[in-house]
Amino acid sequence: MLIKSIRGFSLSIPFKAAFKHASAIRSSTLSVWVEASTEGGICGFGEGCPRAYVTTENLTTAHRFFVENTDGWLHSIHDVETLRDWCLNKSEAIDKNPSAWCAAELAFLDLIGKCTDKAVDELLGLSPLNGRYLYSAVLGDDSADAFERQLNRYMQVGFENFKIKLSGDHERDLEKVRILENLNVSPGKVRADANNLWQDAESAIRFLDALKFSFYGIEEPLRSCDYQGMLKIAEALNTNIILDESFTRIDQLDRIVDSPDRWIINVRVSKLGGLLRSLNIIERARRQGFRMIIGAHVGETSILTRAALSIANNSRDILLAQEGAFGTHLLENDVAEPPLMFGERGVLDLSKSPQRAGLGLSIQHPGPFVQVLNASIEGS
Image (cartoon, rainbow, N blue to C red; front, side, top):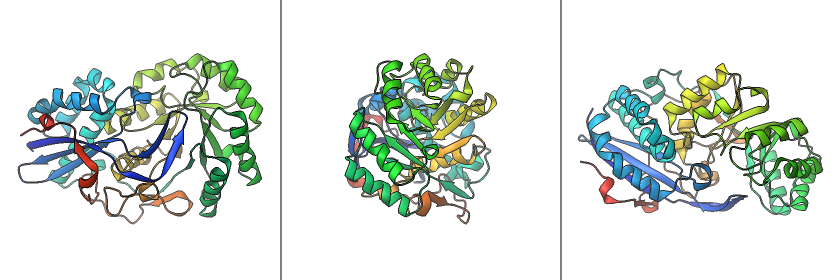
């Protein structure tokens, strides 16, 4: 297979409602969109979500990464084997640009699958997607009234697993806890995302202990990669620490390998540098006794939802929860028709879905929502 062109875009699709957490407020997607095509007009699509507070990436660094590598991709990537080779040989560059590479890698996998009439899972030697996938309800840092309304809507359609965003304001977060208790939501079904709120373990412990709610996991309470401080929190509160911003590379498992029972890793395909690297991570995590959550960036489209499903299908034995699949619950438009999105009870049921080539999505080109990063990233 010869790739004729690779084009990169920024993708911005409006949300139906803004989403707020401690690190950002979002009202639209912020994504890199990649199209890879052959001379015969077959096209593969990929997506990545650069987040400066997670991997230090932004659209400018994504553009630079494409400029530096597009010609090399055109000449060296022709099938899954050459894709794996590039990923392995350029690991240092991917470490610095994981979301940009994720978008490119998914476009290549989608294209290779379409050219060989194989689903991505078959290409990678994985079991075909099948069965039901259960997603968590995710609640942003809204006012008490808005929080309660959103929680009620989730519960009315049968959600049982929840992730809430903390603000660091005691009264604001205490009110969220009171609402959870009033609606008889078990602490064992709720995890809290702090988005790196506190500077030291002692401050975090005092704040969280005062809430008097035993979350089953606290995500990123301290500055990124303060593993010692976060372990202190886990032991003081007898809880689990979920690593997100502090887990972007496989070698970071070495920092926590002595206490796998205290840590839960948040696996987001975009921040980890694509599907191939994410699969390697979950294999090592399984061997070393770690549990995991499949995370999602706010505003992901069906492309990243589909990639994460391959991870979920390959990790059910260590998977505690899954995020994402919001589709047009959140986005004004999705890039796929129909979009991959959860239904009642947070379930996405693929038990009767046919296996289609590549990522298997019917893409509706997001023309009104894309802007070329730079014409120089187009190859020919």
